[in-house]
Length: 93
Image 1 (tube, helix red, strand yellow):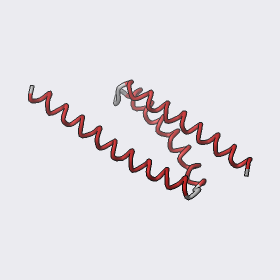
Image 2: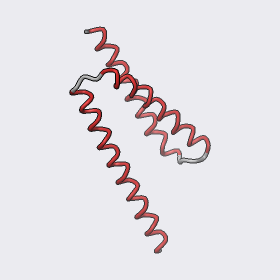
Image 3: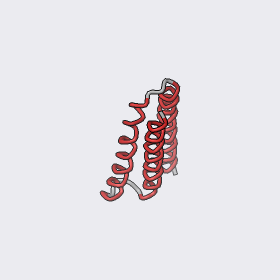
Image 4: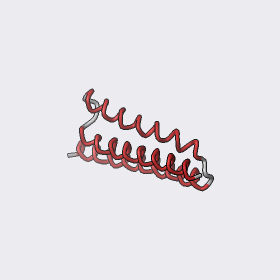
């Protein structure tokens, strides 16, 4: 039981760490939007697509569980959405 408890505590700590990182990234995105830093949003499209590729590669290599795949595909969908919004916004401007 103590070993299982330690594993749960470590997992919870990792989840909280990732949560803190996500809050930090969301602050960047909010500020990028407020400052209209379109060039940075263009770079995020490529980076978010890379996340999907990396997650998929980790699953194929057996490093990560298949439960990681939906997160990669959701991020890829967000990248596509952002890319389309940037193109539409560029045409409207």
